[in-house]
Image 1 (cartoon, rainbow, N blue to C red):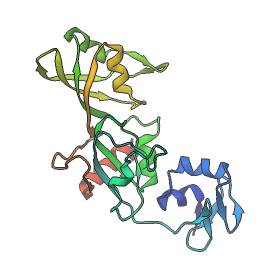
Image 2 (image 1 turned 30 degrees about the vertical axis):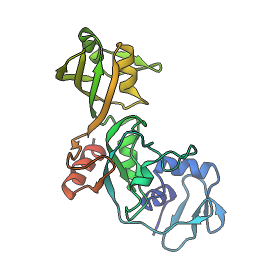
Image 3 (image 1 turned 60 degrees about the vertical axis):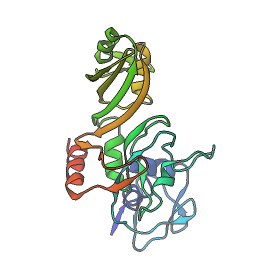
Image 4 (image 1 turned 180 degrees about the vertical axis):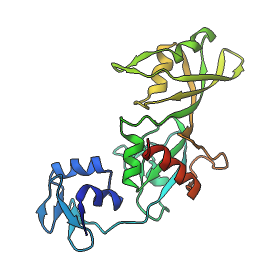
Length: 240
C-alpha cells in the first residue's frame, strides 16, 4: 500500500515527519534509486527506500520509554565532543528511539524517547503546548519568587506565565519550587530564574503532561511506558 514518504519514515522510526521533509529537501531520501521530494508516495513493503544510502524497512513496532536523565549527560544521539549521551543509556532498547525535546546537560529528570514519529511531532511541535513541571532548587531573595509567574520575554519571545509553587523553604535563602511551563524553550527555566536574580542549584523535570517521573528509577535507568501511560500521553498529545 502506498503512503506518503513522511509517514513511512516516521513509522519506521527514522525521524519525525517534519524532519523527513527536511531530509527530502536535502536530497537524502531515494525511492528505487530516484531522489524523493516532499509529498512523494511509496510502498514500504515493495519499494527500495533509502536515507543517506541506508535502506529502511517497513513499520517497526512502536516503543516509547521513560528515561531518568542524569546530570552530565547530553540529550543527543551523538556528540562531537565525545560527551556521554542519552543514546549511550538506552542501547538495550530493541529499536532506535529519539529524544522528545531536550534537557540541558546540567539538568536531570524525565525524558521521553520514542520511535513513534506522530507522538514525537505532537509533543515537540510549537503549536502544541504540553505542560512540563520541574522541581527547581534556587537561591536568592524571597521577594523575587513572585516574579517567576509574571509575563516575561525570553530571547525576544513573550512566554506564557508559568505556574510557580513554593514547596520548601530552606536556610540561606534557598527554596525548592515546582515550576510548570507551557512552551519549553531552550533553557527556559534557567533564563527565567536569571531574569529574576535567582541562582539555579538543581533542576529536575518531574512531569510531561499527565505523565509523572517514576521515582523508582535511578538516574540513568529507563523503562517502557505502560499501556495505560501510553493511552494517556497519546490522548493528551494527539487529541487536543
